[in-house]
Image 1 (cartoon, rainbow, N blue to C red):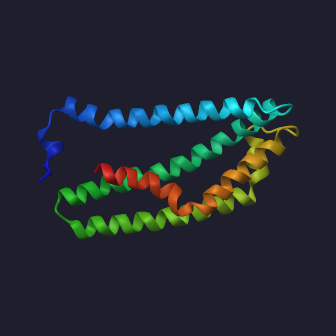
Image 2: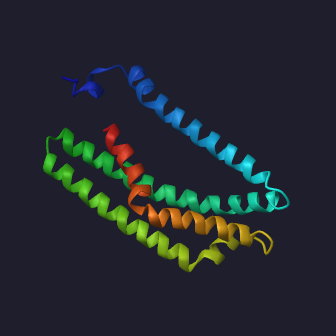
Image 3: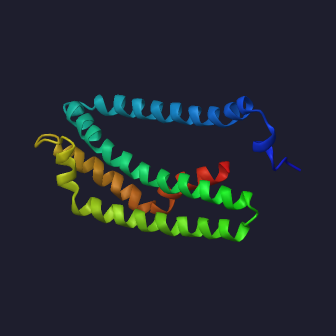
Length: 165
């Protein structure tokens, strides 16, 4: 049987390495993905520089979407961990259920707001008349992926935090 109290018995240095190394590797992989993606987009003949600008303009929107997923994931994981530590499994399960519902509603709400305010948002992040076409294309692609995968996008971050606890 796996030691259920590893966080209370292991040394801080060992726990820090055990939990931070996978997170660091994940961030490196994500950064490499973004770099390679931009290299390919930047090399599109005739429109590469405009296309890369369109992608760059949409990044703050993606960061906000990521932040909402992490907000619910980290907050609910902490609350769930406290309840499990107190031995209150029912309350921990209720927290997970409520967080899942919140993620679904946040996904729907962010998608609707994105659809309603797409052009003003992109313009506020620096899209010009020349780059708005690429930014709208990139944002609509992101929105279609997010709309098709709303049940996956935010919950992935949520579940990652729950799995750790």
